[in-house]
Image 1: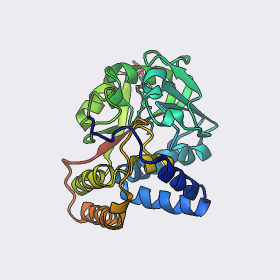
Image 2: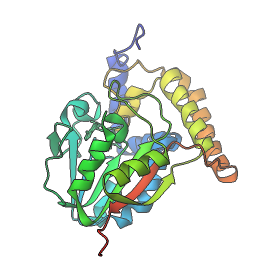
Image 3: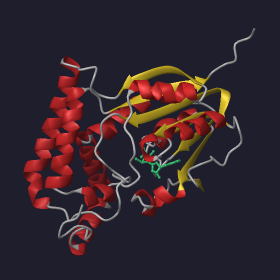
Image 4: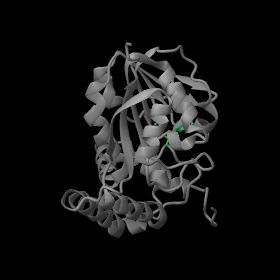
Length: 283
Ligand SMILES: C[S@@+](CC[C@H](N)C(=O)[O-])C[C@H]1O[C@@H](n2cnc3c(N)ncnc32)[C@H](O)[C@@H]1O
């Protein structure tokens, strides 16, 4: 998709001024908190991972770690946090060009994880399965490197806009996730939806307002977000923010409230799965 201004990221002077402003820790913190509040997908994934993080232990491998946005949730529970990335698909994302402290420790070809069998106690894989043309093979690899008493934590989208194109291949139902896990020799402990109908609608509305109307992708990336997007994005329309920002906050708050009072179990942004290697049954 292109338009006349796509790819110029906006006036360099304006973006440099925003960049300088965002270097003030207080401004950065407030802007990031506001951006996270209206980003229902990110906040629901964080909530889901925060709930299961205390189950993580020992050596953790984050498969498709991006710029490790969830390391803070897990670090207190594990001895090592190792991130691995697919060199080709990662290279096309904004996260790969950030001079962030948190980056992948190991790059690989996206086919065979470069680790020994059963070498990790916890394997985390957040919003990655949709980006490989062979998700079953990736889960096989995840199962292979998980220790017999280890834990696998996966999240995958059920409904989410196209992103990281062309490396965006699938969306997942809970039944499909269960099939993929059992096919890899994993036993599923739980599959939990991340939000319901209203956060799904709210997220789509806020995505339209934020990315299509206000076009704040570049600003979001300056805040350390939207790393999965490419670096070439539209010029921001900051003048829309006095209307768009309060509208997005209202949408996010209403969506969260409605998810509580009128949940729909057939709609969600995605699922978090807890699974473990199936134990051989003694005969
Ligand atoms: C939507 S991003 C998610 C990044 C990070 N987990 C997060 O939640 O922010 C998907 C990531 O999966 C990576 N990826 C795609 N195929 C992969 C594979 N076969 N093995 C590992 N990572 C892969 C991409 O490079 C990309 O960084």
